[in-house]
Image (cartoon, rainbow, N blue to C red):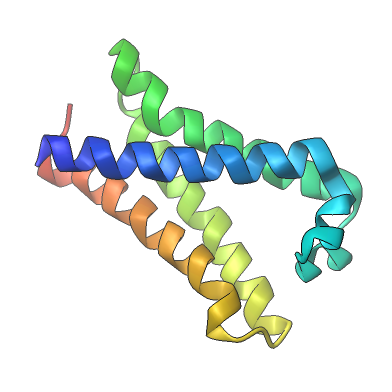
Length: 124
């Protein structure tokens, strides 16, 4: 189970790192890339969301790799769950279909799996 959690955490971290870096580097311009939700937020808010995603992505991996403060892994996973609840909520309020909010929902589910796995199933 430990190996499966490492795989899930690594893939989830990679997705959040990529998405977060895009938001940090492009800010409001993500709207031009088809992210219609960005119209509701300022440039700094989008960059803050990206920063939260990057911090969460790093938090899924770095504490486990270094063995320092491993309790941060499930904490980061739960923080990412909150970010994805916000994302799904925004998509639902905008009337986006499941095709649009499914990736956010899936990333949230993966983050829940990491949190549950590292708290109860295979803690460090």
